[in-house]
Length: 141
Image (cartoon, rainbow, N blue to C red; front, side, top):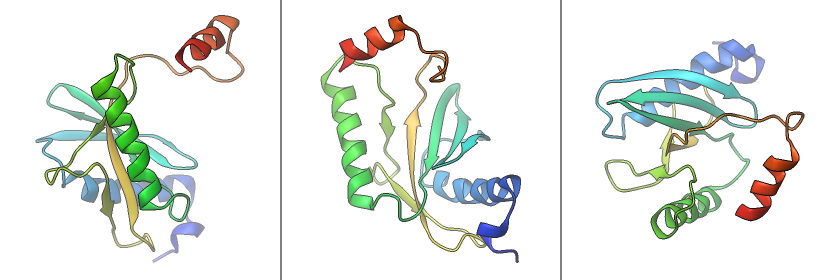
């Protein structure tokens, strides 16, 4: 089996998709579809289930430890619960945990995964940012 680091972008995505399926088995989603969004620092996948959309983030190993990621997820959960701000709300698994650790053959180490509710909107690249966008970010901050 080719080492993960030596695979092409598409080859890595195929293996990360398998790992994503393992992670998603921890959630009560019923039937779902899974489509890659991007694979850079972390890999993200669009998950469609029961008329809802989610994003599964597969964290790069050794980038952030579980305690850091758990803290981030708890913070987003608190913002969702305690404010009217729109943020990607983390989804708890069947055990009530906000992060899941998954592994699959062909990927040398387990990966920390998190499922988020989809936030409606569009992506804006740094080259397309306008003063209005930055003003809204400033108000949010």
